Image 1 (tube, rainbow over the protein chains, first blue to last red):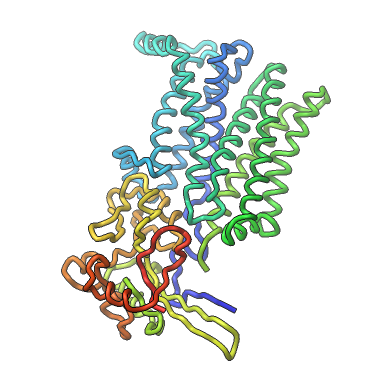
Image 2: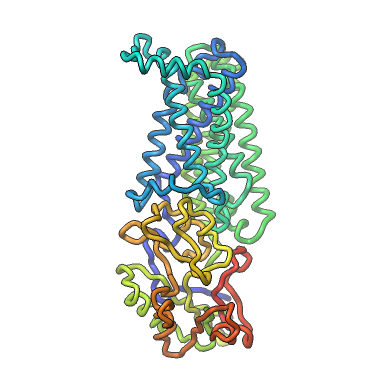
Length: 313
Length: 173
C-alpha cells in the first residue's frame, strides 16, 4: 500500500483539491468561438463556390450574428482574466509556442472581418438599413469589391479558430484528458456541426435546411468516430490517460457525457435529421437545437473533467 | 535544489519561512510537505518531501504563456513578471505539479527560489531555516556548489520525469 498526503495543509484556491482555474467562461467561449467559426466557414466556402443565392442563410443571414457571438466570447475571455488591466499584453508579443497567443491574434483578425462581412449583408436582416454617411457607404462598397478575397481569408481563419480551441487544450501535457491530438479535429468538427445547426435554425428555405442537415449528419458521424477513437487511444495509453478515460467509462462523467452529449446532443439529432430527410414529419428546429445544446455541454464537460485529470497523487 | 528525504522530518518550517519571507497571502503557499507511507503495518516506510516549483528545464508554463510573463531568469530560475501577466491561467493549467496559483491581486505567483535573496548571495528562505539542513541549493553548472556536490554523491529521483518537463528539484533517496 502506498499513500501520499500533503501534510503541510496546502489548499491554494482553485488549485486544491483539484484544479478549477477555468470556470464557465472558458467553455462558453469555446462554444461561441466554435459556432462562429462554423458559420463563417460555410459563409466563405459557399461564396467561393458562387452559391450565394442557393444558400442565402449561410452566406448572408447567419454571418450577421457572428460579430455578436465573437464579441460575447471575447467578453467571456476577458471576464476569465484575473489580471484584467494587463490584457493588452497579449498584443505586444507573438509567441508561436503558445496556442493562446496565436489564438488571440486569430481573434484579433477574424472578429473585425466578421463585422465587415456582417456590414456587407446587413440588408438581409434589416431591408431598410441605411448607412447615412457617404464615407461609410464608400468603405462598405470598397470591401464589397473584395468579397472573394475576404471569403478566402475567412475560410482559412475560421478553420484556424475552430481547430485552435481544441489545440489550446491538447497542448497541456499536465492534463492527460486533454493531451491528445484528436482534440483539435474533434473541436473543429463540433464547431462546424454547431455552425451548420445555427444555419438550419435561421433558414427559411427547406432546400437549404436539407442541404445543411446532410452536412451536419456527416459531421456528427465524424464526431462520433473521433470520440470513440479518442477513448480507444486513452485506453491503450499510459496510466494517467487510462485514469482520465475512466472518468467517462464508469466514473462520474459517464452519465452526462454518454447520455446528454453523445445521446441527446449527437445521436438523437442525427436520427431526427435522417427522418426529416426521409420526409417524415419532424419539426425542423429540434435537431439543430439539440446539436447546439450538445456542443455547449460537450465543452463544459471536457473543460471541467480535463482540469480534474492529473499526474500527481 | 536537492532535498534529502532521509533527513527531512516534515516539520513544515520551510513552508512558514517562505510565507513570511515572501509575504504569501493567507491561505496560499508556494511550498508544501508531502508525506509518503509505503507498505502495510508493521512493515512501513516513511518518506517526507519538501516540494515546490521544480524550475523545470523544459517548462510547460514558460512555453504556453501567451505574453512571455513566465520566463527563465539567468541561471534557470522560472519566474513571472507581474505586470506582463494577464492572469489567463494557461501556466497554472500546464503545470503537472500544480505549483502555481493566482495571487489575490490577479497575477500568477509561485516559488522564485527566493531570487531576491539568492542575488545577494543568501540561501532561499526555506533552505536557510531547515532545522535538519536537509536542503541543498546552488548553481548546477558550478561543480563546487552544494547541490552539484550532493547530487554527484547521492542517489536521487525527480518527480514525474515522464511528464517531460526536466524538473530541477532533486530528491535524495
